[in-house]
Image 1 (cartoon, rainbow, N blue to C red):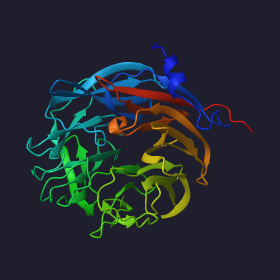
Image 2: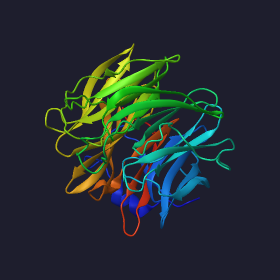
Image 3: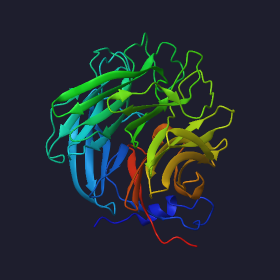
Image 4: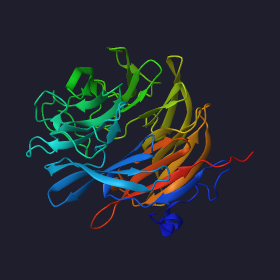
Length: 406
């Protein structure tokens, strides 16, 4: 059994208010492989971890199967290549189809002269990662523009539903590292990947924010996608589209922020199931102060919940995972004393946090990337990037339920 990192526990897994709050779970650091851009998925057997490793000009998407205690049982490689687009905010992940197939993707530059022109290449494994199909491009436009911020969801049998931000209408270049996106025209697209190929391609929203993550969850009637929309007047609020049968709804706003922002904040929403309902979280600065908002969709409509966090130290980059039938785990980033802090909370059915806890202290800057969380049967894993020289390192923590205090 791989040893837990005791020194890391003492340095990084700290209570948010100086002592573990009543009812908070046990948090234990994990010894993880990998360099950066980690993502994690809960499976029937445990967890499936993925990350990118770089060696010279070659980038490789790797995976590790982990048991419910977070112990790595098997490692493998998905695909590798040169000219990959490797970015702190937009990076690959894996998904497991309802029939057991695995599907992964990577982002590959389509024009070396344009730093933000890249394509989405997908690959499938029918034998749990032992072998992979030849990569194929998800979209069909052939333009040297941005295609990324992918969300994947099992869609019955071998079907995988994909949504992504698509820049095929872009006139000039743009990017993630600034707010000068005047020539970028980004839309929300979808398609379904099957063993036979890509089907059901369509555009869902013709104008969206350029580089905020998308997120997707299964609702009672079908998949629900949340993303940051964009109007001609530069209002960038959170919208949803949902599918019932084969029909997609028109874009509809979640509780309106009315946040006018001249450039993309690179800070999108997250959504997950909470029992029969859906819960979404997203950052905004509509009132001038950073706020992490929450909303619950039950019986077909979104209801505003109390804010999860607010204040100048709130950064966002939120992710969600179901914890119990009526509660959700949330992770997000904030700042404290010049450092980045990774925070964890359990959100009850009333939208109020049952507890909050600080998981890690990290250097300031974008190198920390986007934390990811997955949970199943009372166990959760959080993964994030710890920047370092000469290379970054993937870090993680195991979250375990324990008896709650009365």
